[in-house]
Length: 95
Image (cartoon, rainbow, N blue to C red):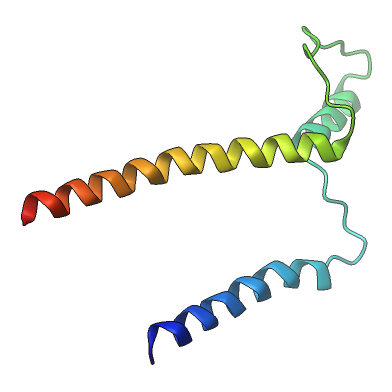
């Protein structure tokens, strides 16, 4: 099996893993943990008031999701840059 076939199989596997949750969602809501925590707190203590308020609240859930995804992408980019850099440095030192 050559590299192109392996890459194609991996690509199909990634697509499969991305599509499967949508096939079996059955009316599931994709809410964040913050909303679930807030709901649990208000059930336990209905008169609870937060200690602080957010400095800035995104105008919509889509903007909030985008900012979260951008933060994750930037963080993983930094981590994997340094992993690649250290691997390249080690490879260069071995030669």
